[in-house]
Image (cartoon, rainbow, N blue to C red):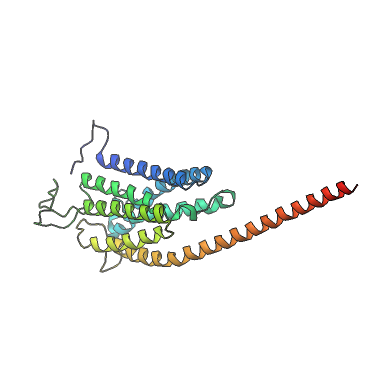
Length: 279
């Protein structure tokens, strides 16, 4: 809607992305402080997230270039042909996990400590990013004569502002997961995100009208990945339950071992004192 640079330097699209990333990290540090998570682990997550976001942008362009090439091989493989959020999300998550497992043995925390809250960081950054899409005039919807229609400068007719629909949904989802995790210590925030966003994205694709290449006949590339997100979200419920159960068992074993060690030390000290008294 407004793609002219501010002061000849900044585009609102980039500004919104920067605001989203800033809010993402503010939420991360807020959560770490409230839950008293080891500060060194939160710092690791911060730096890991920066690397993951950077690779995520590359992955977003890579996925879109692949879709475009599949649809039109004659056009060549061009990384400058746009970006796709889900492609960036996949690349970012993979990067984060690779770095995490590479340093896992040296870390004072575990991914379980931040997994349920992570969707708050993702959705708030994504929400502001979608507002940026609105200003840039990309990711628009189909033509409509509804009062919700927006006339973009480069389009002949008003269209659904799907960017804003998605931004509203993402901010609401962020608020819901935030309340679930912070108030009720909910463990499945990531599953709520994957399932909810997967369903929403699959449905809103029917309102999208911007061309984004081909992948699977009959559905858009994003709809294909949305289905996988829902399946992954359901499977993750069982995985997270298993990992938390295993963690609790480990903590019980360590607590018992620590108690036995303290009891043994106390007994040895008492015997030593009795021996000294007898002498």
